[in-house]
Amino acid sequence: MAKLNIFVVLLLLLQMSVAHAQQPQPQTQPTIEQLLQEPFLDDYYSNVVHGYEIITNSQKHASRYVGNALNCTNCHLQAGTQKDALPLNVAGMYPKWRAKNGKRNGIGLRIRECFLYSMDGIMPPEDAPEVLAIAAYISYLSQGQVMGVEPEGRGVPTLQDTGYDPNPANGRLVYMEQCASCHGEQGDGTEDVPPVWGLDSYNSGAGMNRIQEAAGFIWANMPLGNGRSLTHQQALDVSAYLNLQLRPADPGQSKFLKLLEDFLN
Ligand code: HEC
Ligand code: HEC
Image 1: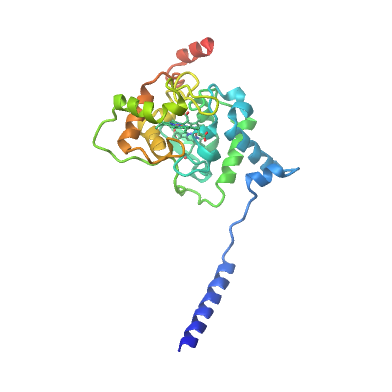
Image 2: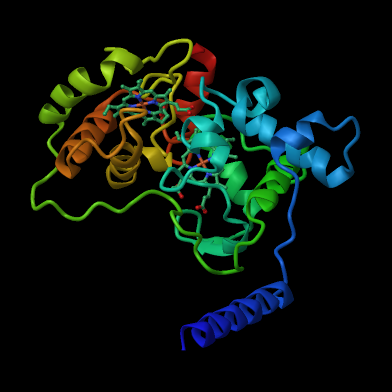
């Protein structure tokens, strides 16, 4: 009897492995590290690598469109590969209608808007090499995702209502205790840590300047290396505190302020 059972199990295993082999295998693609070592890349992969370089060092590779001290990867953590930290494997989610600008957005427009708001810069033209390279990198990250289906860990977690309003005064205490050691008491960051307010930070029109959005990001990812250690309320409070600080004006709201700022800078 025992012998027979083993036989049945073996047969099942064999069947499973045959079934497995018959399933279409996902195409594998080279890693960024591998691509960086290649002496020659085709047009697509050279764009992918360039897109990666822009995301990780926007200051150097997209300087003409960047108006602050940030790099895309400061918010899209691990070069856009980290769940709950605004991952960029989202090509299959576009085009999509967005209330923010009242039209159907392709991935290109979505990228260009982050230059205008999060990077407090200038919106690059649609066919700017920087935009095309980032779009190629986003396609590369999106490989294996299903079109129209939200990738797991997209955006940031939505924090449940705590029943209390965000309290910026309490947020200031959280900031001084848990954030100032890296981001500075004046929020202006250091060589290695990006600013969280001031004229070198994201502007008031940026997604990060929405209390809920920033709270989700902060709760899941900050203090860096110790994410999910704040309570939801602390994340909301510190987010409300950041929201009250001085930062560049929303270019969508005030063309004049924007001009004035450019003049003063
Ligand atoms: C200050 C933080 C910050 C920086 C810096 C930043 N982004 Fe974003 N980005 C966000 C936030 C927050 C969202 C989502 C909220 C929203 O839609 O406004 C977002 C959304 C996106 C999306 C859409 C993601 C999705 O899930 O559909 C893309 C694409 C994107 N950003 C690209 C970029 C690129 C390219 C750069 C650099 C040029 C950049 N971002 C810099 C904060 C940032
Ligand atoms: C150990 C140092 C450290 C601590 C502590 C820390 N951060 Fe950060 N934070 C960083 C670094 C570094 C980045 C950029 C991450 C990257 O580029 O990979 C960042 C990114 C951010 C960003 C998005 C980029 C920007 O500058 O706008 C926000 C917002 C932020 N932190 C808020 C906070 C808040 C709020 C706290 C306290 C609860 C906090 N951080 C604590 C190091 C830290």
